[in-house]
Length: 191
Image 1 (spheres, rainbow, N blue to C red):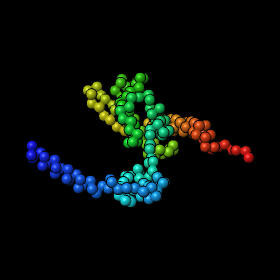
Image 2: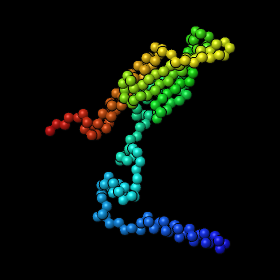
Image 3: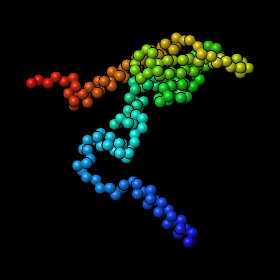
Image 4: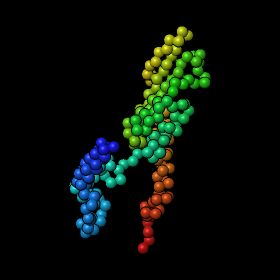
């Protein structure tokens, strides 16, 4: 019992010693604190009371969501004909499962896998890369996989870019009709 009491008192002393440097009890005068939030944050960081990391160093930060990227939404919409193995927005890649077409003439031994890589968020020809892989299996279950050049690559890329352009146009129309009217964007006022 005595040993626990000594431990407790020692803990209290060390806690008070370390908390003494926190200045919790420091009285603040309103004339010393800036009213502007950005100035207050800057002052607190200079005094060692706060820290910000990476993109959070700018007020508000940058937030990227898959639903706000028309290129990503276009790719997901176009690729809905096949199940996806991996769809990572932050990784910038979509990978399908192995699939074969219903009218496969090679007796169901040929399967395809498609990978879509995002190089940029902008809607342009070099923003995405579509890769098609082919798996051919023989009768004794010996399978060979290889990357192939196919018209399917170009067709999928074009379809994704077209769909993304439509999404972007629709998003701009929605913005113009809702937020733009409130802010007076695109509206000429008579005097």
